[in-house]
Length: 541
Image (cartoon, rainbow, N blue to C red):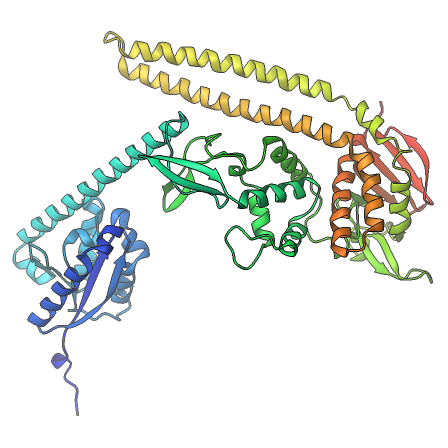
C-alpha cells in the first residue's frame, strides 16, 4: 500500500520572541500564541509552538545567532523542517531588527528554503516565493516593517548608550551611581534616581580576614581550610569556601572601593573607561591590598605545600648545575632513616642534568637557616639595598607627569574656548582637542602606575625589615603548636617571611654545599654541614 504524502497536514511553526521582562509579565506571549493557533486552525495546519525566544533581542541578530530562530533555520537546512512549512510570526520585526540589508538577507534565506512566512499582526501578510513572484509589492510592505523595527531599536540603543554615558560621567564626578549591583560584602539602598547608599555588611569582616591571612603568606587552599574550619559563611555559596573563590577575591579591586564600569561589545563585557576610585566603601585599606599584591607577584611555583607545608623555601631552591628547581623527596638514602630530601627535579626525571645527583637532607638545612637567622644579619643586609635611588627616580617621574597633566589640561581648556569662536576651523579644533584628551588620559594612567609602584616599593621595604624577628617568633610558635592546621598556617607565614629575605638558594652536588643569596644578590652565604662557612658579594664589581 503506497503512502500519499500529499494527504499529510502541512506543519506550521509559531515563532514567539519577547526581549524585555515587561513583555514577559504582560499579555504578549498569550496574544502571539493565540494568533498562531487561530491561523493554524483557519488553514488546517499542524502547529508546533515550541519556538520561543523569551528575553532574547532581535537587535544585532542575537535571536538568529544564539536563540530559537537559529535552531529553526538549522532544522530547515538539514531537512527536519519540510519545504512548504509555515513560519508564523506576529510581525517581521519579531524576526529581525538588524539593518534592512541584513534583515532582508535573513528573510530571503527563509523564503528561498521553501518556507512560507505569515505575519499575524495588523498587516497580515503571507510571504513565499509564489506570492512574491505574483505580487512583488508585498515585499515593499515587508521592507517598510523591517526599516521601522531597525530604526526603533537603533533609537532605543542610542538612548540607552547616552543614558549610560551620563550615569558614568556623573559617577566619576561623585554625583550618582551606575548600578545597584554590588559585591557580596556591600548592601545597596536606593536613595534617589541613579543614587544609592552603599554600606558594608557582615561579609566585609571575612574579606578583611582573607587579605590579612594572604598578607601573612597563606595560600588560597590554607585560607579556605581555615575559614571552613571556623564556620565563616561564604559570600554566596552554601557549600563553604573554595580555593577558586579566594583566588578571585585576592585579585579584585572593589575590595578597596574601586569600581570598573563595563559595556557589552560583540556579546562580551569589556571595561568601559577608567576604574572609578572611591565608588564603594572599602573593605580593606590600600596598604593591605598592595601588600598582598606584592606578595602574590613574588610567589614561588604554584601548588599545595602538603599537609604540613614541608618546604619553607619552596620556589627559591635551584640546582647550581642546571638551574632546575629542587623538589622535596621522601626517601631513604644510604641507610639513613626515611626523611625529607631536596633533590634536583631535572636529575630525578633524567632531563638536562647529570651533575645534580646528590640528595640534601632537608631538616638540617632548614635548621641551619633558622638557627643562624640573626647571625646572617638580614636586617643589615636589607638596609644596604639602595632603595632610595629607586624611590627618588619614581618621585621625579611622578612630579614630571603631574606637570605634564596640568599643562595638557590648560591646553584642553584653551581649545574648548576656541571651539566657541566661529572664526576657527571647528573640525580641526575638535580633532586636536580629542588628541590632547588622549594624551592626558595616557599620562594619567602612567601617573597612577608610578604611584602604585612607589607604594609597593615602600610596603615591601617595611615588610622585609621585620621578617628576621618574625621568623624567630613563628618558629617558636609552630614547634609548640598542638594543632596540625595551626602549624601549617604558621609555616605558611614563615615561608612568606623567608621570601622577603632570601632571593635564591643554589645547591652544589659536588661538595654538598648551599649558597643562600639575600638582599636581591647584594650578599650571599655559603652553608655546609649545618653551619655558615663563608660570606661574599656575588655581584660585587
